[in-house]
Length: 82
Length: 224
Image 1 (tube, chains in turn brown, green):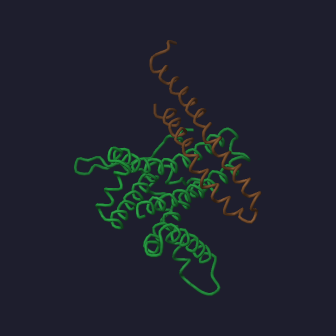
Image 2 (cartoon, chains in turn purple, orange):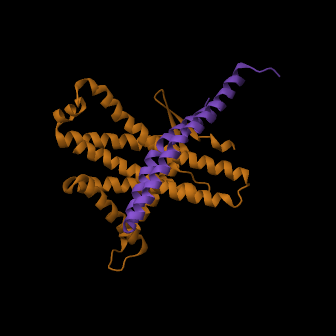
Image 3 (cartoon, chains in turn blue, cyan):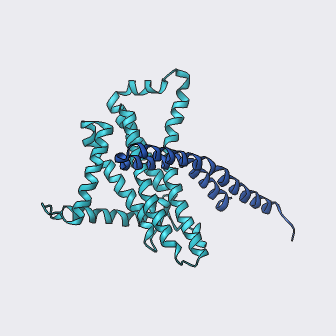
């Protein structure tokens, strides 16, 4: 069974999807962890504002997650479209 | 696993133009709209001092979003844009929750729905900006701080639409794919309900809220 050009393209697309997801997950992981840590500190200082802080933290995390989501979209494109 | 990439489509020949409809998305959007209309009917049917459960949920939504729009836009504009914001949130919330029910799928899983809503928010934001500031001040806003940066400002405005719609689409699509793959791995035992709880209810609620809040923020940035 000979390896053709299409197979190489397919293999490259799979490797690219893995790389995109792996590197793309670093930033959101660090960012969301940082936001959660800061929110924990703030709740420790002001426990009575816990509800507001949690809501703000979740919205901020959802926004900072978007770079990871972009890499997920790219990975899905590479997996299913190429 | 074949259902992963399958998009049910219907092509219609219309005076030489091929119109392609994503039938599943349209059908699910209708389901959501019917549910919302039913909810509105039930919530306002017997308004009383002792509210029925639907009225309680409706009052909760109205109170929360009235406060949010009032904070962001001010007294006059809040009254005008509150129905849009509240309706957008209710539609997105129900759309994201629809995937929990077997055989139904989220309309937001198709990129066309979030992109359409994102473009709608973009157009509304810029229309309200032109109306509030006047056309001259609106155009002048693009030449801040110096005129050479005008192309960058235009690209920044367009990238807002891309980011807001791809965020929603990626979250819902990614969640749906993870649920499908894990369900196949464990033969639909034990794990899928927990995954549906997280990706369907939790992420769906947060993403609907984020989309709504960002649309509101884009409007308030253009107005002020």
